[in-house]
Length: 291
Image 1 (cartoon, rainbow, N blue to C red):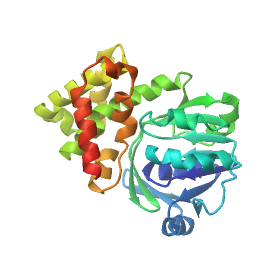
Image 2: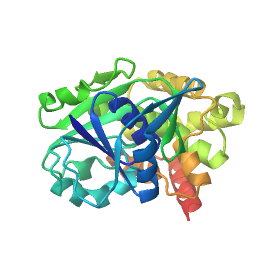
Image 3: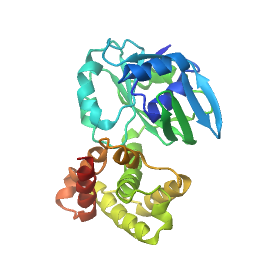
Image 4: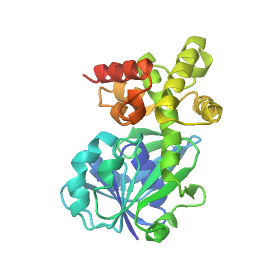
C-alpha cells in the first residue's frame, strides 16, 4: 500500500516512522535538502533514549502530483488553503488531515474526495530534517468526515499495535475537546515563554489559565466544564517538560496556528453574546509576536 505524507514536521515524521513499517510511505517536503536527508537516512525516531529508523521515500512537494492511495496532510493549519488546489487535482482519493484547531474544517470539505481527520494526542519533537523524538505516548483519534469508514480500513490496518488509533463516530466533538486543551495551553506558554507544566505549578499562570478556560467553554457553549478543566490540567502535568508547538513557532520566528485556535473561537456565533477579553487579548498578542 502506498501512503503519502504532506509535511515533514514533528507529526509528519512521527506518522511516517510508524506507518513506514507496514506501508510504502513517501514524505512530501518543502525543501530538497530535507527530502534528500530522509531519502538517504530514513526517519529516525527516538523513544526513551533509544533510536530506531524506518526507511521511506521522499520528494519535494510540487515536483509532481501525489498519486498515493492515501494522503495524510500533516502541515500547519495555515497552509491548508494553499494546498486545496493540489489536493483536489492529485490522484489520491482518500485524504486524512492532521492539524491543530478547527479553522480548516470548511476548506477541507470543499475537496470532492473521501476525507478524514486524525486528532493526535502524542508528544513529538522534531530533532532534525529526518529525526523526531516521541516525547509522549498517547492515542490518535480518527474520524471520517466525507465518504464511508470502509474507505479507510486498509489505512488504519497499517498502524502497528504500539501506535493506538481509535475510530470516533463523533469526530467533531473530539476535535472540540482537543481545541479546548490547545486554546488553554498553547497561547499562554507562547506568551510567557514557559513549558506546559508552568501553567499548573505557577499560581499566577494557573489563575490566568482558569480564566481563559472559562471564556473558551462559554464561546463553545460546552457543558460539563469540570470534566474539561480536569483534562486541561492533566495534559499540563503529563507534558510538564514539553514546549508547546506554538511556543516553538514563536521562538523560531514562524507563523503560529493562533487563527485556527483562538481566531476560530472569536468567529463563533457565541462571540457576539459572550465577553471574552482574555481570548481576544491573547489572539492579538500572538499575532503581534508573529510580525
